Length: 202
Image (tube, rainbow, N blue to C red; front, top):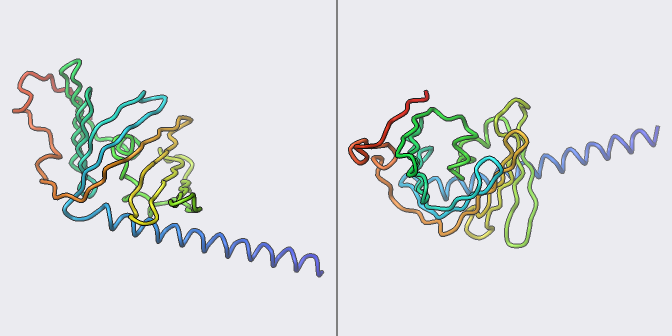
């Protein structure tokens, strides 16, 4: 009986520690969301690499769930529902309604809006940063796992790794700045690309 009681106590302590760890991870993400999800918006530089994407670097502007990303080969506008992707090499604009995984591949701050919607959380300290681990409760979800590295002093993320299917995508983030963004920059304006072919894939 003593052995069973001891095992039960150890299991209970483990669950308590796990719950405290998850609660701390949630507080860190809440603080990070308040820093980078300001009403006015923000901008940053980023580089992305992954098996399905290759490698690219550029700049991004965000405001809530909206974003505008620019790389030497591609420009992406997302107004919260519709995404326009302009490709320089083909002079084409693809119009889509992307799922959360597709959004996250271009917007490293997507986790601001998804970490409260069906993910288990844990965290650990790594030098001067927190590393948050998110795992989807629903195994059918497009984003199954995320690792987010967050600076302990500024509460800004420097790295996001995400698992879609069997492929990992890594995004490094630098030069984050809170900056007011006009809502107009998150929608494609066909007048700026009069010769582009628009392909509606919705």
